[in-house]
Length: 229
Image (cartoon, rainbow, N blue to C red; front, side):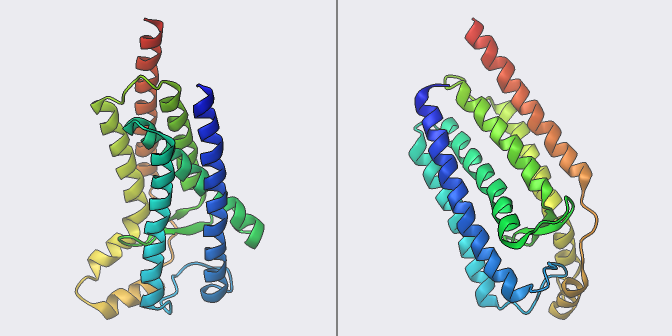
């Protein structure tokens, strides 16, 4: 890994960690207002539609900022992708570090968190996105270590399957609630008001881990072989 890549990783990491603090402080204020007791579930439906819409925009803006710094850091698409997942992962890990500093939360490994709101509520124990973030950092380092190697279609397929498995594991319960009560707003509201997630879809998480690992190993072996030849 050359000096330029190492320098980029340091500065992208600093940006992501600082950005995570800003994000954590926004959530800090929201929790103080809407979840003063510190319990996130069931979700507070007293949050106005205006606040929810602004949260959607904030979440989109977060992704745009991470994409922007990745596009600044690299020229090739593969490297842009690597810097993006690296920035996203560092941001996500430090987000929980800053929440721990500010709120002394999470208190336990299996504390559930609201991850995103688009297109429905994403929820899981907080440790799950952190584990996924560690895998993303490993993938980013492997991709950047071999700048001349490209990601093959089969590896993209494995990464997409992994991402879909993780995504479905996050939205499974709340998507099911929306589908079961799509004909009645009152019933949907009642269901959301009463629902407290307790069981994470670990089998989907395992599928995601396996396919991500296969993709990383496939790229690594091929890139190593190319270097030796």
